[in-house]
Image 1 (cartoon, one colour):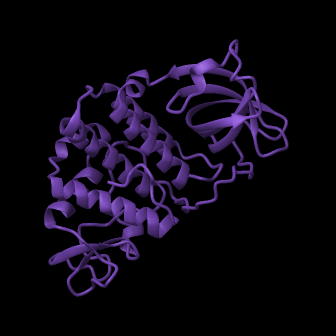
Image 2 (image 1 turned 30 degrees about the horizontal axis):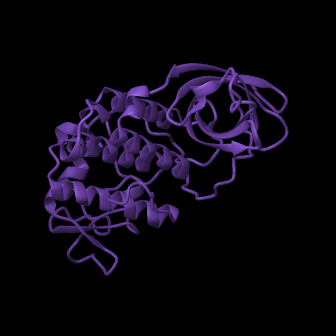
Image 3 (image 1 turned 135 degrees about the horizontal axis):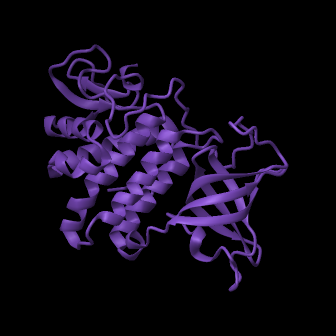
Length: 291
């Protein structure tokens, strides 16, 4: 399908597209398959890697279980022991949004163990602003849903860390001005994650017949825009402005998402494409990206 193999590529990084794209899954269990790494890390070894904390929850009286996205191994589940104690040496360094360098011990079970942590960036500025925090949590949830395998994807990791950096840089705002500043960034990141997980929306021609004129909607099944002839009852109606806006977000680096000049209609259309793609390909809808 044209939507899965489009030549349209975002330019936020100069690296090549991975030759084997990942498959979207909705299994919330932690990855258990060990993937070979350059240093040959196996069960029973301790290794160092950069990571972003995607989610954490309590385990017993003092521990926490962490969902991590790592540079070297992709999705990893880990236990931070004693983190909830007042004198914990890890403290607040392992909160969601935190970009850290970890020492992880790989045992024989599903969960690895955090044995050391250095904070690279807490993203405190984003945490302090409610709307920026919500946008950040949207991004973390998408990573949880789209990248479930213990398999390195350096481009996805770098996109995530850049997205969080840009959240910190945005000036806090209220009401509509906050949405106008942050919605293009949030949508651009979501679209790029779809691309990196193998589901790039193709919007420059009909994903069914290749026609470049008369594009009227988006088909999640076809993976892209469709024309009046190829549309069916599942097609999402998109305005020409919406199609142009989606293409602009895909082509621009994350830092330039705000320059896409999205209209209110284009923003709604991009959101509809993101949600419908998630639902069709992964069977989920982001709870925090409901519009």
